Amino acid sequence: MNDEEERPGIRGDDDADSCTTWHWHPTGINLLRFSSDGAYLYSGGKEGVLVDWQLDTGKKKFLPRIGSPLLYLTDSLDPSLSAISCADNQIHLQKMPSMEITKSISGIKPPFSSPDVYEGICSKFAFDDTAGLVALRTENYRIQFYSLFDDREISEGCSLGIQKDSFALHFLFSYIPAIQSG
Image 1 (cartoon, rainbow, N blue to C red):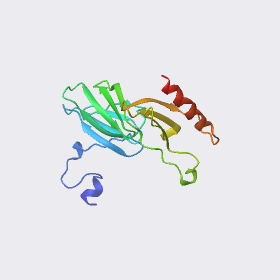
Image 2: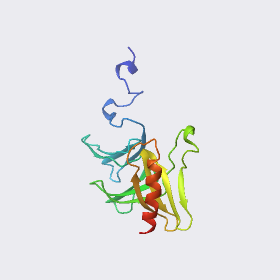
Image 3: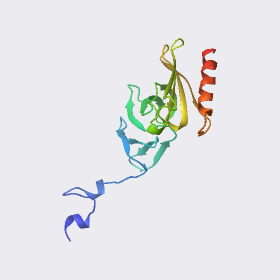
Image 4: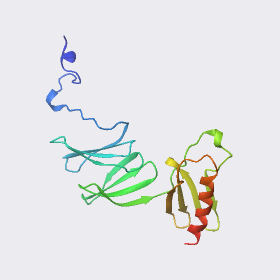
């Protein structure tokens, strides 16, 4: 038996005691980052959960339900703050080490991709050029209302279930005037 068969996962002259495998994410990992003091490893994946791994003990903490795949984790000059960038064009500011989200900033969300069979039946967005409002279909049957004049999200709502009739369109068109009137 050669060295590689006796020590799976260890290559060449690597020290087996210094190699550790940790697993939690059920899907791909998009971000890995060490804390500034080197005591923690942060990982985030497509499932939208940030995991805080304490390196000396192997314990982990979770920040679940972020809502979108995680792309980046950035430290600030203040070590008690960091920012998470998500695939749905949101940035979450968080307090460290508690991992509490203190503020979320939403940009225009990427469009929902739908099968070509639905093209022509319903638009991917509705636009009111006088008020500068746009309503977009997003993932998970949600609708985002965004002010182009103010460059900010007005609100995001659910279309109240998966409906094959015109209910979602009725909801959308009755909701836009309510936003315009304040």
